[in-house]
Image 1 (cartoon, rainbow, N blue to C red):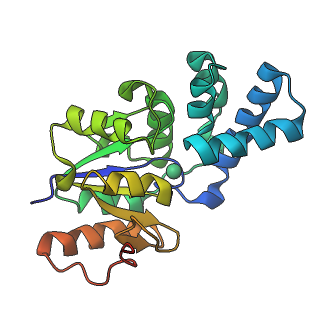
Image 2 (image 1 turned 90 degrees about the vertical axis):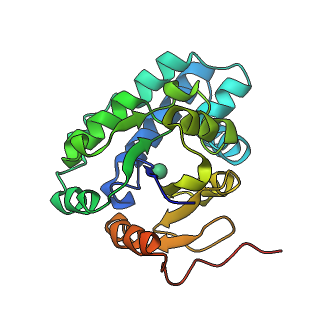
Length: 223
Ligand SMILES: [Mg+2]
């Protein structure tokens, strides 16, 4: 199977964790949970951790338990001047230009948030599609249905895709759909084919994959 697409996660994949933007989004998520569900800060934090563990995202947990107006939630948590946390990254733009495959962004945030982030990074014109949570029917990664919606939209099988994400849990379910998985800034574990320290290493890795000589893999799945 030849590769056709590279699917990039957005937050803390196309820019580093140290940028601090996700921490700000996390603060807004906790404030929303506190105010809307009338919880003390420590109760809101505990609920969020529980939802992250059981559902993958806070929104997925709120939706599963019927506790959210998704539009109001998404507007509130992403109401952030992202330019305060991000700068244009010409090296990222150059790396993306070296990849001779279709490139898309798929995020659990909204497509509008993703476009603002891509613009702040100076790479908005490098992707053929920006797929947010609404475009996949509010089904968050890592739910396999979210990836099936993406594959349908792109018109490709999982085996034609390379997925780049900073969360191993997101890669594991994509691996189950046949994707080749790349973890950014983490440790090898089940479901992770390759690990890179920085997203800039994805370009050279894709080049090696296309040559059929990718080198050392992350630790293979057990069993
Ligand atoms: Mg991420």
